[in-house]
Length: 355
Image (cartoon, rainbow, N blue to C red; front, side, top):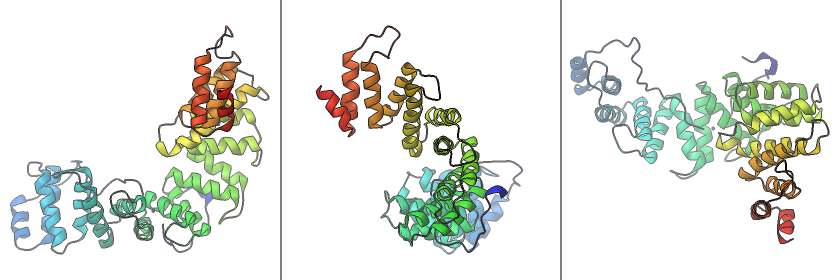
């Protein structure tokens, strides 16, 4: 547990999803070999738990040849005849397309049934489909209920998504205090997005006392663990001097760290801003040695990530001859930057394009 960010925790309220490791596993380590014949007889005699165990055996190839179609048949039989915990496993099979065509609608249905039966590992998936509303009709309130159940089962991702709904008020009552509690739970369970989000609430004083030093610790932990969005947040905090230190050079390093690791779609926006801010530092040369050519490269990265004013600044510096050591200007490249910046909504780029 991260004791330095511990917040008193009350009752869990409603929270939400990204795919989580399922109960099913292909791992063979030290699994006892089941008596397949005995399980088949028991299943046929009405023992649904035996049917579930048969499904596991076929899924893992344990004591029998691996066969996903038979595994799914047994999971469905158990699920649909009175053993709802097996529904979660059936949902996993539909989600992955194991033993059947991939079917996210069926996955959502069976994972929801499994979650309601107590298979909390499936709650995050069930909630996710309802939260995004792409394969089933969006229902944030129901998603929150699933995320709450998953969070009670100590599923870190469920706690995180539940907290995002608490914070936004999407489908449930907005409550920053409950959001902070659930982000704390997610962070304690090593979900770095929870740590970063709790850092943001702590920085703003929403639902928890404002504490810049605590925000620094939360952002720093998440950044060290590879959460690139928190690296950008850490850069902003250090640059502002609101926490225990103001150091633009250190902030610059955090911006570069975020800019150089932009592989996660949800973090692209923060990475683009980080690239732009690092570019500004190198263009201005106030606290860091000026390096306009590298500034152009960083602005270009921000531009490629969809940040309009990144395109504009790249075009301006290129037009001033900073793109190469000879001071030559490629007007076609300049025009391309302004065209893209204008297309992304930057009015300065539009004006420069016309000139």
